[in-house]
Image (cartoon, rainbow, N blue to C red; front, side):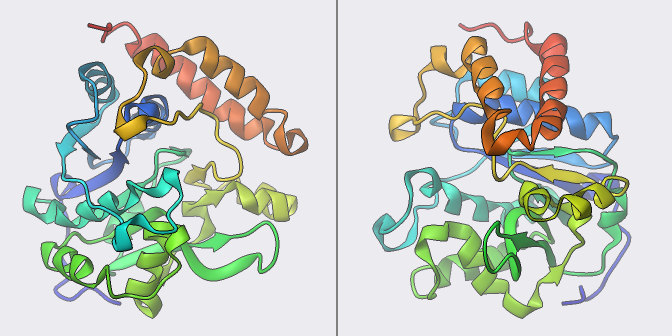
Length: 292
């Protein structure tokens, strides 16, 4: 859908947005923040978070990595969370990003924490659309699909849309196990502008077609670590993580080493991209926020 009343947007009215619901994602978020700065993305970097779950040390680190934390309220899954995997229970809280018009944001790109930026994508801010996303990829059939992956989104914040989303959350029919991604696919439907795969380098592309992945390298802006994660994830009861485990560098190193062996070692190069950024950002800010 073409945006009505399209206008030139200033850098202060743009935002790259991500989300943090537990301390478990501090490492990937500082890596993402580092790559945003490294490639000179000309926009505010806003991180929505749940204030009752995030430690002072984590907030300190993400701010040092360039994020502007914005506290939001938890949005529970519909139908009491029936059929929702434990790792997706918090995901409907992402819908709060549509309220960023209240802090002056007119156009935004949402990036999940399991992404990194490989090239500048400032050209995206001038797209004359309300909502865009990259088509999803499946390793098995149906492979390349019409549905989109909600880990990377282009959108124009609107509190009016946010309220409409909430009003329809309990009554809309969609696959509950796919959480907010399935809901957003249903909500926006055919109005979604499909963005090129260069804006969503899903690792599943490489698994299905190494030749296509190789051909994308010169244009790839964002990599999405879907099939294998370069960072250790924790189960955090009631959203509260064990701080010793969150900041356990040996655990993270062991995780990454094992990750490089998964799926026949096909993603060593991509995992090394993340590892290099992690090592660099930890050298720069790792000692700035000691544990209290």
